[in-house]
Image 1 (tube, rainbow, N blue to C red):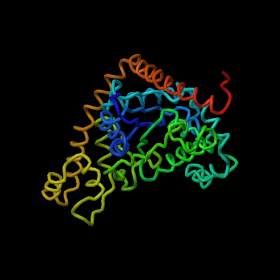
Image 2 (cartoon, rainbow, N blue to C red):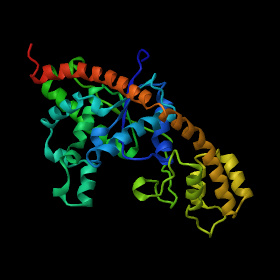
Image 3 (cartoon, one colour):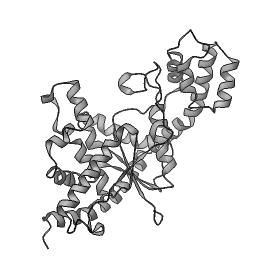
Length: 328
């Protein structure tokens, strides 16, 4: 960590294959920011338990996420990559936060309200309801200054800020002395120039919609998926094809191509196939090479966990003293 460098923290749930929308929407920004921040990127395996309750699948997904991020250029010498479950202090802090948080407050959470809207309230597990407190613990225990989020995810950081303020107010020795408060106030780091990446059907690319192009897709997958992109024959420019294509080419050369091939949908799709294949091939090759040394990947996670756990334990010593369970 360079002197004066701020701490950035982000979590990734291990719930399936990433797609190009994930990459252009967030993943590549973590790589771009690794020289500007002291970055902590954790694999949110305990968060995943709210929806994924299959031990074999979860274990495989954890390693897959690590491989995904290493393959796109995350450098473990610059970034602390770790498993959430390797920092047990987070769960301890989450319980303490539960004890100063009201149920009506948690009922405001978008994830909980969405779950209620989709099904019976009595079927929602406690983990889904309590998700914001575990997330607040993830953020605050590492003294994060910045948390990268999309504009629609600011509430995650707002919950962490509210919780930090409440804890500091209740337990700090002097609420007016900032130097003596326990938790700093994290700020949302809104990723700039991030647009919604359309899927092959024109809707937002999402695993739940089944309209994705996987980030590490094979050449055959790329060809099949691109050729199935929904097009509108009433226009010379297939807008769904163009919207994906502009992720892979600069506007000047892209517009020249679409002018030259105006109305030739098959040619334009073939050009997109070529560009996506050229982009994905080196990432896929790097991932395949990394996957051959599973022990090295697990070592990176273990070392990252040790570093994150040491920071968390230092913070928890202060927290335990403040709440009164640490007796000297």
